[in-house]
Image 1 (cartoon, rainbow, N blue to C red):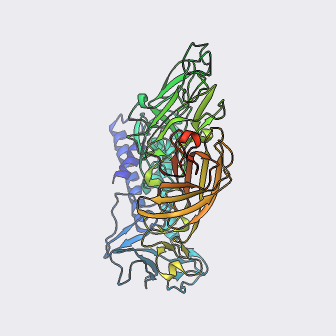
Image 2 (image 1 turned 180 degrees about the vertical axis):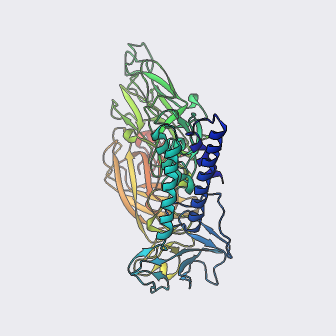
Image 3 (image 1 turned 60 degrees about the horizontal axis):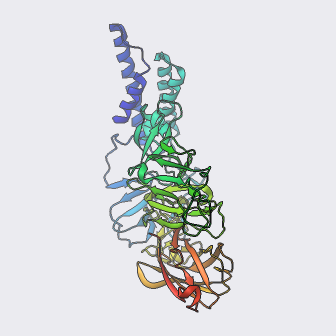
Length: 564
């Protein structure tokens, strides 16, 4: 009984040191009384999952005649489908609603409020017109409350330590009994009496509670521990540089220097301060706790710049983000932008984001010029916490996916539709009934197109964008956009498509000879909630039916691969 031992050990810290046989005997008696109360609590909570407390992970469970698994969300997986086909759902005589996933079935039990009579709906599933409830457990809940109060009173009577410490243990007993896993360093400290800085396993994602993350907990001896992400590749691969040199003649790329740039500095990071959100992690980019700076100024993570030269391609400021070896990657929406730049047509050079989005780097500057993540925000995601589908085949409102949005059914899978009862399937009761959602049908997605900063990059011609995937040689979607008339400007265009999957390649075709030069294109997939970025190498995306444009470097059509 691991959890009970943890409780007892934590409580034992509050007992006075034994100095006589009488004290030792009393201490042993108190131990036995606490253990008896906790054992009674365990038995009660083991009998009824619907109580406020639930049995610990390693506690004994009653014998059952049918082999089954119970998920964290209460969904029960049972062997076989009782003669039903994959995708079918039905109500059992035991008032369970089941769904055949093939080869096994997932079920949940239906109980109604006292004034509501259970009945089958038009699809043969159990429903409660007056509302749902759980089994009546009021008597057992009263027993649990009484046992808890007895335990709390015992702790107060026998402890000689700070009452606040006793209160902390009292607050954590329910979580210890339920097998609650720490979601933050503060919870790790209070649940397991951890007081040393180091690496801990946390479960921080509210939308994916079974996803674990290794986190460095700092200041554990204090009342406010903080979370950090250790960077295995170290500070030499995680740096932010605002270059110090300034040319005396800014139109050159080399030459005599003037006074150094006042915002210059080089900062290298070994750990990142992080903040948990429901499905992602924010990097606190200006935290310097585990960073080393040379030069007069600290530089935020992911930031680069200089005031060296306004000549194109001469930037000296560089940054690198390397998350290799961690469990996280850059969120799809994280992209770098040029800010505070002169001239306006300057852009980021050598910008690169790896396909797994764990490594990013770039070079930027101007007279002066800086780059950093858009909005000055950097978010990281765990691959398992960013899925649009659920493994239990639930969907719609009330069933959140790893990406924090209501779960959808995989439009390219064998169960592409969501029934009114929030199950994925492929039958008419899932796809064509009132309230059914067929995710194979068209959804509204979005293109973002950024024209290049070079002069005359805009165009009045139409641009046709064909979207491809590695999973198929066929075009997934085609859309035509126009009005991309200004340089260094972002344009958004919506388009409808079904089965968009994961875009991996774009084919761009221009309609005329006005000339269009692009910086990047972003495809937002409304099915998955993810972005795919297609970046143009410097001077590469020049489109015109007149191939003599831009010194014979333009083409009427080109293919562009997804970043990485």
